[in-house]
Image 1 (tube, rainbow, N blue to C red):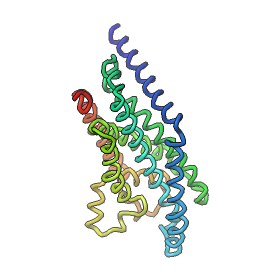
Image 2: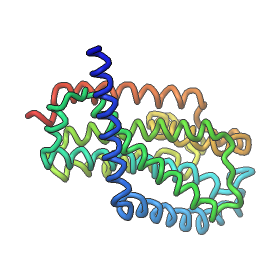
Image 3: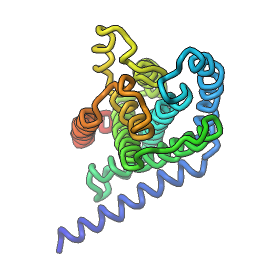
Length: 271
């Protein structure tokens, strides 16, 4: 009976914390949803229309246009940046305002607290990703998602992974400047070098091997495979889809375990 009561408390707490995070995202939608869509639209215009037209004239990316090739990467870039940014800003804000202490003294388990913040970040990331994908229809000639299951699952797993990363960053941050260090000096370079605008198979062998150490390469390529499956030339398929899933889920397990361990120890919270 006690276990059922405890389970119910955690379930209610998870729903409440998730609702709080989602309401926060929707309440300030001009800040959370609109800017990334506008930014990605500029990428479509500059890289897709201007640069892409020249690449297409030179042979393009096989049977698909350059615009179709970069759409999955740009959607993934939006998902990654927004899932990370939402959690790191939300949890660090709670730390700064010291209302996170109310969660720590509540009967909620630390896993529920972590999952609640993750859920809010995932909702924002998936909403932005869907909006960016819809906008891409205005710049491509009838872009069709080849595999909805692969596309949706990769987006979901990627958003999950980077919400955990944002949570860890927020726990370790001691001032507002610390919140922007990882996105600026780690996340942005890895994203731009993650095959968003090019196939790593076009690189020299040494740089191909270096690129395979970048986890974002696996996410971008798996998502691109889900959208362009059957239409993308094999020489532009950089990563095996099964390998991509294994790598993504491995990172999720490792980072989730690390974040939960840090939360249990009160790293960056109880000091």
